[in-house]
Image 1: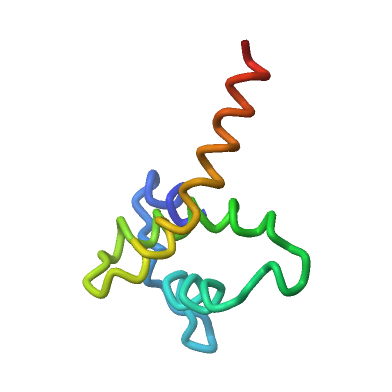
Image 2: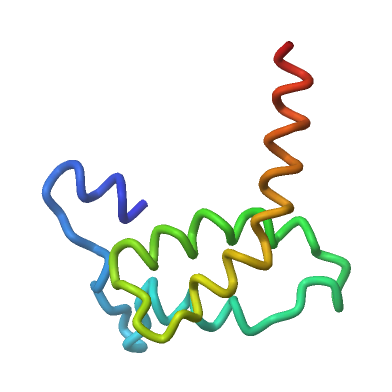
Length: 88
């Protein structure tokens, strides 16, 4: 939603909630969970693009987003191969 809002000139990436939450804080919080513990490994693929967006907007001086994306890159690559197989 934040990326879409940007197309109309509304920067919501750093817009805080009433509880002082932001998209970056929510992403950092979600990255701390282990989806395998609750049998929700599909959530990892969904996080890939969100983490990439947050890293591109806010930067990654500590390397935490890069490390997270590196551990997930094989999942997205496998998904891409499946899509290619379906398309052709």
